[in-house]
Image (tube, rainbow, N blue to C red; front, side, top):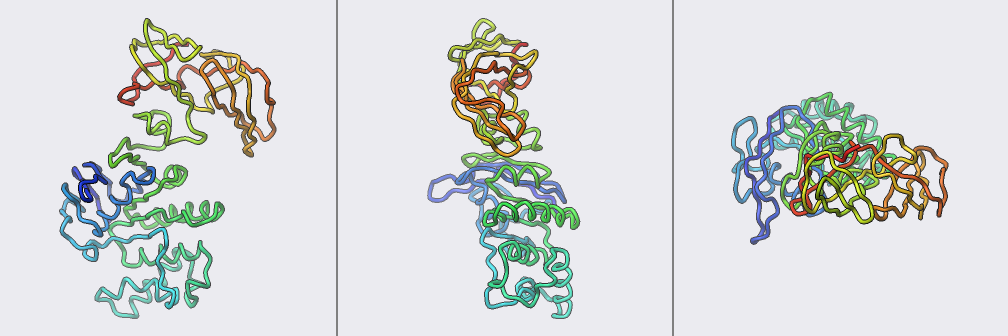
Length: 356
């Protein structure tokens, strides 16, 4: 296994910046998710770690050794791609064994190791089949076994679950996490799916426009987002965001007025999570009569859209059955500690609170 460090890592394509000088340290045995929208630089970062792309500048180190000039085959990195990339003319066993062809390992030992890892990922009953005879989840397991058979120092997962249906994604999230814990292999997952990132990884790195916006636990990102981008990207349903102006200890947001517990001046953005908003909550701030315009049952919760003094706002209530109907007027508020304030110009979260 390996401790991975990226130092001012940068990648440009003909003047276009894909990765804009990121610094990141990943401890030996950690499971880290790199989360972000398409085009944010996360897959480019993964390809540089794998040795497929060379950095424009900066350094990549494995256990303190610089590997910028080490070719992919010399880095002992296992990688699972979105497409799985299995060889259709080979059996499952031959696919799993394939990476060992390039190592000085006797065939009997290569087969023993391949069967061992096949048992770990629970495909030992499929070894004589070909990829075309497998389901998507089974192909995913074969690709994972192939990446693990050479006992990599680093395991890279590039959107590995995006081709699976919802049920299989849930199963494979659990399985990949189990395997990673069992082996203790340093693992980096690249994904645009926040549920994958927050349920599988110990730590999440959020990227945007080639830069690291924030890194931390799922709780850190959700409850203490460093920027407007992180606040809006992490959380489902998405956070309610309202432009406002702070002056004289008060925050004005459309028709709403909120007292502030800390001195703030100028243009700000107020963020309210849908699950933080409550009907008839005691001790709430920002209480306003809101008229419901849409009701969306979501299984265990109901999502409401309402017209409020803040503007159009969405809030969640637990339960399968809606308690309110369209055109109902409800008193809506939120616990003061749940409100997030951001500087309008920089997008950075302010260390300021709404008063009770």
